[in-house]
Length: 407
Image (cartoon, rainbow, N blue to C red; front, side, top):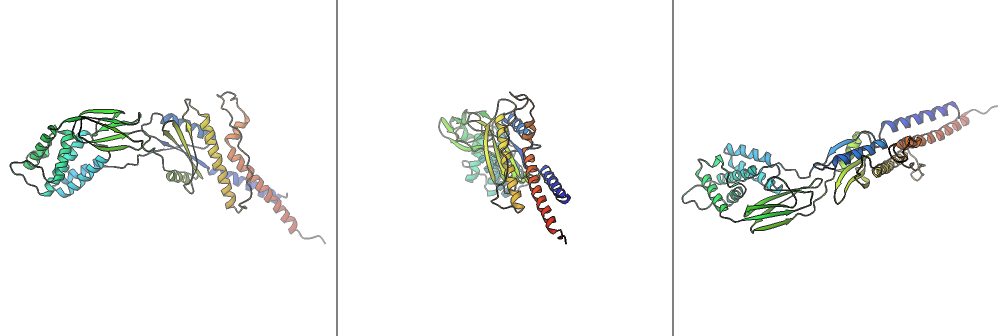
């Protein structure tokens, strides 16, 4: 090989290695599961496995509950409209706030706020309808206002609202609603859900499942069930007998969106995202998902039990396997983009076996540990070197062919 061929080999190898070092192949992401006691230990194990594999800094994101409600915000806007005597707008906004609050089982509202929401919804509906007060007052009109007044009385019959003072129609309606509810019997509501779930009734303090709430007046009550790592569940229960039991169905597991994970990996210049997340099912596991950053496609997935120790050998092996898959896929893609024959086999060696850490049995420092942690880079160097050598030979051959023949 002449000097020109050697220069091409050296420059090609250096450029390939620099590109491999500058652009990470796999970007590790951990999705935090809120209110899960095992989240921190699982995250630490995933971070240790990613670090041992040499994947770089871990990016931490949060798993969000897919239900997005804002009853408290709408409640405040409705009250502003009500104080401004814009009863039609107030009725609409407070009605939407009440619908969202019932659908979410009172999330974000205290029992007092829950009762106040229904009371002021009734006032807005009644005043917007043009209803008038006359003696004897025996019926609340319109029917929508009556329903809201009764809901408020069921949740907080002992409350006193300033808006009722000085308005004979409102005061008489509220007094009649309270009297109606006090004449009703009461019952016990029992909610049976997953043992990890927390149950709240009418926006009250959450209790462990199974939860029993005695002495609830007959009428509508609102149930909310929350389990860490799962979608929340809520329903409206009409208590009309002494004992009511509800069995909550299994709720959906919350997962971080792979499309969002792919976008985060692209922003970091990586070809793949390795997404880790705690899975609270029958087993407490760490879910691993390998996501193609270019297409958002899920390439592979596995689950590993959370280990009792700080480091999980099974998790390290799983991270190694998925990162090796990412490396192979990325190298194949690069070869195809460079114009290589699609059917040409890509000469890659299988990854070396995992080398135990120094604190593991047989874990004395070994030269193989350095090689295993940098296997994608070593593989890239080998491929680049082989390509550069072939290119150098071709260039040298071209130089000899181009030389003029001797006379």
